[in-house]
Length: 422
Ligand SMILES: [Fe+2]
Image (cartoon, rainbow, N blue to C red; front, side, top):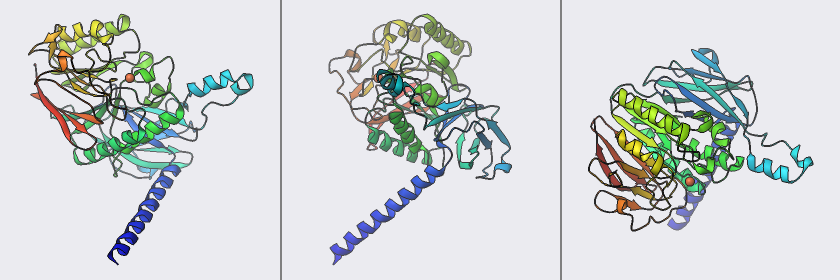
């Protein structure tokens, strides 16, 4: 009897859960704006790039925003901004297939059924909650909210994750885990993605990823701003999707630098183009700026590692590491290897107490690999190497960056503290 009751309850719960899911998906499908997201790559205390997707192309769309919640009451919002750039996502893979199929196929519209919308809102107040809603000819969509970055020196947390490609279910599960974290912890200000969002530049895979990232949004519709670093699966020659999805962070060459807060400088680089030339000039200038303003924390992020746990060193080793060391950068975030690594502090090609730690390698959905067992920079008490689906949490305080690697199970598998140099 008990068994029968328990089975009935399970079936009942499944039906209720299924109904809730269908109702939620239906509500989302009716919303004129999908996957609403905030992208940071410039001045996060006063500006935000807001991006969303839609199955319709309505160039009259606007973003309504205010520091007070107004739901769908359009007239109540204090500010509105017309959409900037918008258009259909370019699906290079489909375009190439169409081209190889001949002239007739060329006339088939490419990915006309999903459109991106960008708009930048400026003159925002620091550390202030902004409520945003997309208004289209069909009405006002769901209201979301996000907080601008602080200009105070209070401790903040930054999530670092890279390589979300190929196992979308894992990426989804990690994003749900993140949504639970940000619902409980208001000090988490953003997520830095180290590149390789989707396995190939098809609209379907990017749609999967953007929908998966939308799972970081909490039940109260709190958005987690994303800082997007470009990976090899987004390399410019073959994939405009990255720029369309994130509002052209870093312009045509996909590298940029900004202050996350006045005491945290982030430099996001591109390992898919020349590491010399203009990019190196840019890096030197960004580091000089941080030096001249005596910015306490200097963090670089890029996709292919200078000190890899799995593959060969990237161009960053020769072109950028000497500059990192000359300017005493504090921490470097790397991806691409699909494992977990924390190097010993490195300077002049050897372990040194005043050296730089290289963290990351990517486990946000990508299949995991074993780190090479004999690398000197991954040995000893000051290093860590393993594998597993994960993200990294960086708590940035005036005295130290407290780092931990959090597995998708919630277990903390590695942690360390990096003392401030200045
Ligand atoms: Fe990669």
